[in-house]
Image 1 (cartoon, protein in one colour):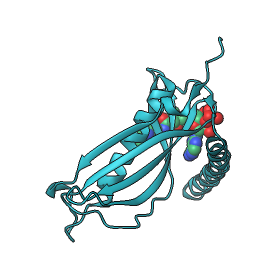
Image 2 (cartoon, helix red, strand yellow):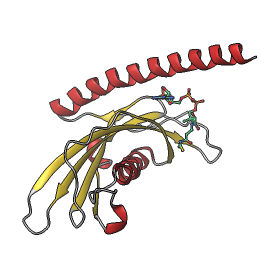
Image 3 (cartoon, protein in one colour):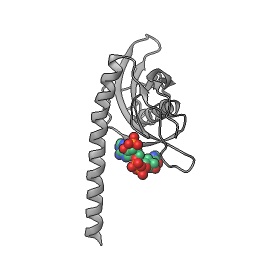
Length: 171
Ligand SMILES: CC(C)(COP(=O)(O)OP(=O)(O)OC[C@H]1O[C@@H](n2cnc3c(N)ncnc32)[C@H](O)[C@@H]1OP(=O)(O)O)[C@@H](O)C(=O)NCCC(=O)NCCS
């Protein structure tokens, strides 16, 4: 099969902005965390589709921490780019910023890491282009992402062993 041409990080960079409306609120009147999680997954997927040129499915979402509440009426701006690629998998780094449109004040609320797998029309994994690392920061992020990915695969292995042990106990 022909080698895939490497693509720069900039080719995947995607920004999504949405005004937070009353239907996005939790019982405290600030934005529900699940709304942000959905937007993170959407923008990360678009970045990875742009890189892969294929449909993608989400395979892992790292722990998410929300450092500041987001208010209704504020703008949420999410920026995603591919930070790492394996053979068929890609990690997207998503930065979430909330902006008060009246004052222009911006707060970084969280950074999320989401892993997607490029799939064909039957849902089978397909290879993705290598990532062209053009700056020192991109090379550093790639190495950091490699460590995160190794940790996720370790966790997957542990979970598989635990499920198998549960099934043996249940049988
Ligand atoms: C994603 C999916 C197609 C992968 O199929 P699979 O048989 O597990 O395939 P593989 O084991 O070859 O994994 C494919 C790639 O995903 C990576 N991967 C699999 N599980 C992972 C995990 N938990 N965390 C990080 N990466 C993972 C593998 O390392 C591999 O990467 P590589 O090709 O870059 O080396 C399959 O697991 C699936 O369909 N999952 C459901 C996805 C989905 O529906 N998401 C939405 C949830 S509602």
